Image 1 (cartoon, rainbow, N blue to C red):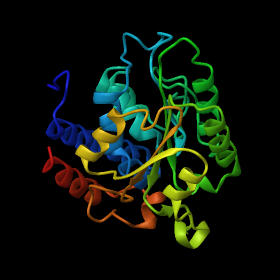
Image 2 (image 1 turned 180 degrees about the vertical axis):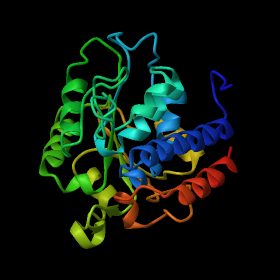
Image 3 (image 1 turned 90 degrees about the vertical axis):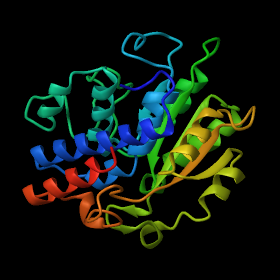
Amino acid sequence: MVSASPTERELVAIAAKLRASAVKMVYRAKASHIGSCLSIADIMAALYFDVLKISPQTVAEPDRDRFILSKGHAAAMQYAALAERGFIEHEQLNTYCENDSPMTGHVNYAIEGVEVATGSLGHGLPIGCGMALAADEHKYRVFVLLSDGELDEGSNWEAILFAAHHKLDNLVAIVDYNKIQSFGTVKEVLDLDPLAQKFADFGWAVRSIDGHNMAEVSAALHSIPHEKGKPTAIIANTVKGKGISFMENTLDWHYKSPSPEQLEQALAELESVR
């Protein structure tokens, strides 16, 4: 049972549970992108169980916080979080990537609790800008979780300029900086460094954190806006495949699904954390 104000230890346990759910979903569907799911588990646990002002009962309220998973290929992790939080039934996870199922491999707004469908990279932050700009008298915040490889898209940098110009301090961009994208390391494909400095130069308030240190994750997410009149960028330094030893920092797990033996090992490693 998770308390109303969960402890760091409870959030770490939730993250392990979300990882296990995502691994089982990808295994069952013989799907991909498990490495991309695992790197954001700690962030998703903190958001859905401690930060976002949204619940299954307030999912349509105008003052609810908005969350956009711009890296929509990590859909299994968002579905796992929504099930654990009570937006959808756990049984729905069993239909992930099945024919005619709304549980598609890129996040689908037909699922309760999903704000927008994503997957064509570079769209989440521009949509988030529009949501933040439209807040008017409402007090909601907009959190957008992006991949690092996704920042190769020019549309993101237009949105970064736009958000600073309009002083959207109710907007938060969280970059899953695991430094591995679809065809190699970020440094090899299109180097982003110094990433934090780039956001700062574009007029954002920036904080770099360890995306697997729950204390740092919670502290960064609870102090929004980091600077009044500026959008917030959180550069979360993460590990692709985090939590499963043979998947960590390995490009293969952007595409592969685990074998039965690998599934057993992965679940055993995750169970030891809970």
